[in-house]
Amino acid sequence: MDEPFDWLLGPQPPSRSQQPTAAPAPPNIADPYADVLRFLDEPRRRGVITLLAVGFYDGWRPTHHEVAQIVRSHCTGKARRSLDRYLVNGELNANYIVPSVFDPAVAKAVAAAVRKATT
Image (cartoon, rainbow, N blue to C red; front, side, top):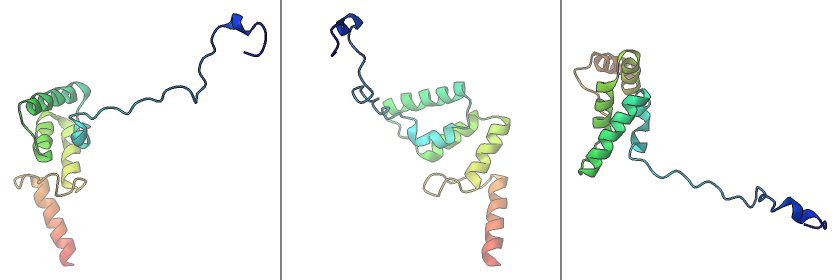
């Protein structure tokens, strides 16, 4: 406030360098499972996250495979087919999920991989 009447303007807002930065979001119970939760619509995703939160409070520590199966049971139509393709096509590595051996898509994928490996 260098001018004699600057006091009439009141306090100046802080410059960008003086404004506090936003704190990073706190970790969420669903963060490790975000890749499979994305296949659900918002109400179902919230329901599964609530299930995870209640289970976590009770001492349940689900594996990625368990959460993927829960998500799959809540998926319908196109979302379920997309999730199945995601799980079978190896977009998740072996440390995350082992698809059911009774799933016909698994048999086709394994047969194709064996055929490719032997030629």
